[in-house]
Structures are given as C-alpha cells and as structure tokens.
Length: 74
Image (cartoon, rainbow, N blue to C red; front, side, top):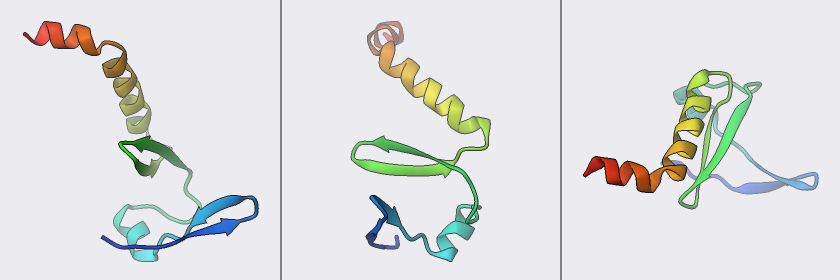
C-alpha cells in the first residue's frame, strides 16, 4: 500500500498517482478512467474495456434483485 495526498486542482480536488502504481495497474497518464465508490472506497479502473461496464451492470442487477436472488438461492 502506498499513500499520497489529495490536492487542489482549480475548483476540484486531484490526486497524484506515482509512476510505479500506474505501471502496476497497466495504466498511463492519458488513460480515461472510471471512478466507483463502494463501501467508502474510491475505485479507479480503465474506462476503455467492456469489463467495467459489465461489472457496473452486474452490480446494478444484484442491488435491484437482491431479495429475488436470495430467495432463489435457498
């Protein structure tokens, strides 16, 4: 785990991501990313691939049909 600080960028807040972290995540400076907030954590992932969209749809489905899926699992 590495730590960094949030900083002011214009009227927004930005984060500096170390080069090593970008390399480990297979990302580069110009990549478009998707941000997701779950359980008080911010997840950052590449927005280019279909995986992120599929995960978002899956999470929405699971949230919407939570009770139905629990009943079917019995």
